[in-house]
Length: 214
Image 1 (cartoon, rainbow, N blue to C red):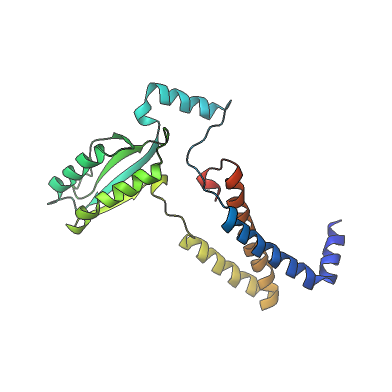
Image 2 (image 1 turned 120 degrees about the vertical axis):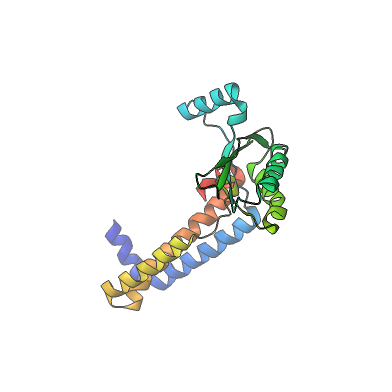
C-alpha cells in the first residue's frame, strides 16, 4: 500500500506538492481566523496526578499553584532594595506563597521561590508579567534579576533547534551529495511541523489544551 502511494505521489508530484502547500496555507489562515489560546489550567478526572493535585489544593492551597523562582545577582549593596521588592511581590494578587530569600554561600547570588495561583480565574502568566514589571526599578539600580518557571516562558524557537536543523542540513548534504536530496526530508519535516502547529492552534479553539502542547 505504501509503495502504491509513493508511486502515485511521484507520478503526480506537482499536484502533490501543490496540495501540501495549499493545505499549509489554508491551515495557517484558519488558525489566524479561528485560533484559540492554550491554558495552564485543566483537570484530568480519575488520574492519580489529579487526585494528588486536589489533595494539595485542600491541605496546602498556598502551594498548589505554579512554582517559580526569582534569582538575584550582584546581591552585595542591593539587599535593602531586594527586600523591598520581595515585600511588594508578597502582596501581588496571584502570589500565593513567597519563601524567604536563600543566599548562596559566597553571598553574591540569592533566590526566592514563589508560587503563582492557577485557579479562581487567575492566570500565572499575568502575575508573572506583573512581577517582571515590578523588577524594572531594581534592574535600573544595577541588580541582575531573572525569573524561572513555566509562567515566565516566552516561547519561540530555541537556539538549539536552529543548531539541530543546521546540523541536519550538513549531515544530509554530506550523505546524499545533492541539494535536492538533502532538501526533500528537511522541507517535508518543516511542512509537517508547520501543519501540526497550525492544527493545534485550531484545536485549542474548541478543546481545552495545555500550553505545553505547542
